[in-house]
Image (cartoon, rainbow, N blue to C red; front, side, top):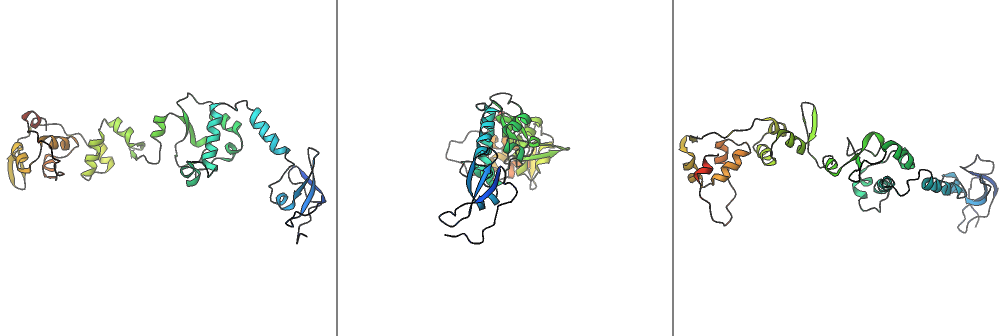
Length: 278
């Protein structure tokens, strides 16, 4: 079958390693083919479209040379770093990979120098410090795999650098919530209790802790009673009020905020030693 409107490639500049020297027979479905001479001296028949779009640039020797260079030039074919490099490429470039949706599928890319060369990747990153370290995109967990945005990190460090983490900035310093809680020596229950009361995350982290004080009479809606009496009126446990106070609630909020219906269990007594710690 003749090829219609084919482009004459004889005399064209070389296509990679290939130089067109003669017209060849068409393929069975009518595609034009050209005889080419490769730099290695091999003569081969190539479809013209593959030459023009750059899909074929040698007789096959270029690909073989790249594979050989990859295997033997750096001497790290079986190193952990080489496996990490391959895993990075699979996650970002292969849609059939199990976790592709979390990487390449959501726009995570690899810089060109790393994508093409393990040697460049290894030169930029160096050997991993220990078997507990792996490749981490930092400081931008949504950014690319590149020299400027990657580090070797432990699992604990990586857990603080995920897109699910809540980042909070105080006095120009940005940390994840877990780090702030450790720095401020504040429990998660206390933090979220303050947020539930309407405080911003920044206020919840910086507001002073309430110290336990002896509580005398408490006035709510114009009525003044002792703590013991309010617990009876509100049908509440002392432990509930204590837990709320530890979260930073005022005594009035702790007594007036509705509680969830009690599960069927035996109510404990409001012991005096608990009342004294509220």
